[in-house]
Length: 202
Length: 432
Image (cartoon, rainbow over all chains, first blue to last red; front, side, top):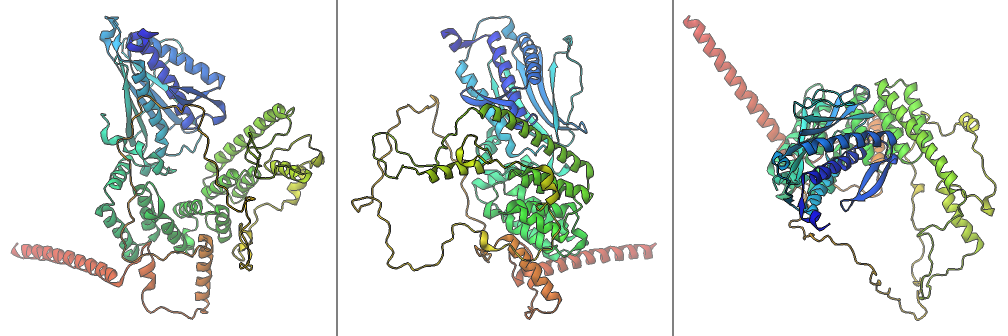
């Protein structure tokens, strides 16, 4: 246990980042009301209470995505993860949460753990999730029923696995963009950003 | 921190009112940075510009100025409050156009009304008033807001009826109304389902005491309040619970269950929103905590203790647990924002009487106008009262005069430039 507290390896970093995405996506889905709030349960993680979905289908989907993501993180082949919120009826993109991932590929060669305690990393993750929660102060209300989609940008030579398909970037035209905090495990760095439809274009 | 100033909004998130349409982040940054070093003259200037535009506007669409002014206010004063003057602004805007038939079903105007209603303590009254006046009766947004209000109060049946009314009036856009109606139905049915599940869980349970409902003595200390509850007191507690919605089974006092008959109520339908004329403002009878006038002399304060002295509350016992403190917790390095004194206006606006509600004022205004039309009104102001008071703040004569003067000089200078150009052209042509 003592060794994990002091340094971090590639595998551990991949796991931490994947875990962050699992919690992050869950809290976005909860905060933005994509799924009814009754289908979430409260758990405590990172020393804060978070909402996790109990919807079996959604749970299944998310575990699939996150485990695939973990693999890619371990191989350092993933560049971006994007959560797109679209209007269910018109298919218009209303919100786009983008997480840019910078991988330090040199970690693949040397297996020596990096100097960064799990505590500081979790602290950084916590502040990102807090900020995600705080975005309700300026995001527009999603008045229509919405669906969400996850896009993952990987290196070009990667084969598209089963259950995944190629897609466009789903950019919002005339959007307002807000950068959120970032965190780093010293192997993976994650920059977060949210884009939403501009006020006067509504 | 790389983000630097970008975290401003996060530090002040409690002071930012969420808007339906969201906020422009640039405006938010600007507003928050201004908050720290006082309202800048730019904001005051812009407000003044809007105010004078309100008075000097001569075009076809005076509502447009109000609409822009209010939207600007919303974005510029994220914390709302008195400083923003939003409530007054909305009220003025809304009263100004009650007589203008052409605006009655203008989506912008209806939006202003809804915002106004949401600012009031009794939004339902406002919606009823709107219906009676025929404002927004063909706009889906009115019915949506109205129904949301009912739903928030837990009356989903009336919320549904409001939608029916909207369909009857064939409010536009129809799809939007349909969509929100469907969403409401989905929410209600889900709630019913959940309640059914809950009930099946709860049934074996005994009626429980509600926390904070009654005083109870604990530990070795003597109880100060009487704790022996008589039968009627017990019953009253359970009644209180019952009114909260969950019927308690197994209580002897209320073995008679009233069974809800759907058909019966729908045929009676006393609660259906009917189009009734607005006769009089709601009476003040509904007020709570009002004391009847009575003699106050010779009245003694009831003594609380048997020694004739007021008993000091014992100091709260020390908690037996260690409060969790994060190790890396540091005292915050800066206080995010301080509230600045309001914009220094020389002419302060008159404070409305406590008794008045916005709706009441509205009705009075309405009545005033009617009286004025029928020529009953004795008063007649011999100055341009309308212009001075029409905005959210009061103008003085000089301001108006200056505004006119600047406009005139502007026009004159433009004319001069134009005539010079014309002359130049003419001279050119003569040369040719």
